[in-house]
Length: 491
Image (cartoon, rainbow, N blue to C red; front, side, top):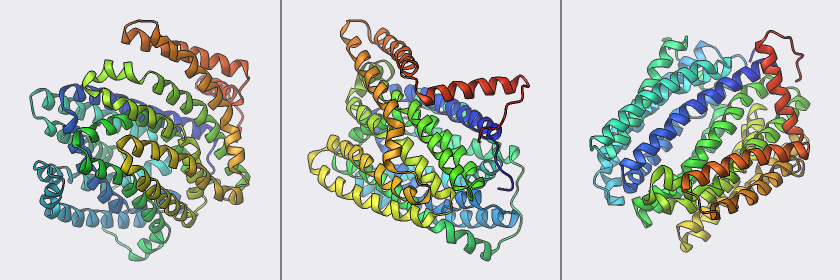
């Protein structure tokens, strides 16, 4: 990064990132609701199984180079072109591998349709090779407005394609068409909006230098991807595609909310922290602010979603999806921990310590496998609860290095989020009994949401939470800046 990132740039980038994630995931959410009402749980389960293999292959396509390009201060055209051609080559090899092995995997899972779906959906690997470079350039320049435009347009178009195919009886192929169209449209639009074209340059020396940083990220991402998808593989094999569909829908609701809010903050954090990587005090201040702010927004959303889970599923997905409710509630608890996980890991990456990042991932994956082995004999719900237990233990693992790197201990971090956690639990306990009043599902959900929001904000004001005051000040600054009023830099 060639210049110091100012607060105005961070806020502007965060706003566009929030709009990009919020807009696109809002559309995805609506599309998934419509598709879930039109399609069967087992059809969603089949797509989840196929996506596991494509996601693992996609890790090799990006190879951690995306983050390495963002983190490298003096990355140039040679770096970007070299990474692009390598990613394209790897995507080609992996596509051939998946194409050949598809029938054998289909036989293992006893899903005849699996082979054809995998062979077609694997084309998204090539789109990923393009998108990884385009996203790296956008992140480096903090031009998230371009990502907002491309993602929103692609989601609208692909959503229409998926719904039309589902409505006309194409079944699982509606989901295939939706995913393929989305990736294709993002690639096409970004090719026009991002002013980058690959040059006929390839430097093995540049690849080696970038790989010295990225190989640890590749190993970390591979461990994380295999670990997170191993449960899906086991559920798909030991239970049924329908059970996997319920498990996946339960995960999707909180994931959509959290990846929007928390993910937007973290996407802006990496380039911001990288620009300050030589100033440990500044990095600590930004990480702390990210944890406190994320927790204040994320935790009450997860508590509220867990409370309204059953009537919400009835309204949006119909009664056929009610077995997804317990999974939804468990995953709300899992994702409530994300502010601690992601802020700590982004700080470690921004400081260039991918070696520590890899060690953390290995430790967490070993822990995850032990918990999975213990929970597996007790059924699919025990598997989900095991993820939550692992999440709690992982907060200590992820935070440990930053005690030395930033002098920011896990005790401080928990102390920073406890106020938001306590008033969120108070809010949840207060709105839970509303379901016993006897109103319709729709009126119950609306009442719980309205009362919950008012109560949470009221408690934040009464207890004078610092993060609430900070958010109000930040919003005032953004409004003032839009009006042309000069505001002093606070970082």
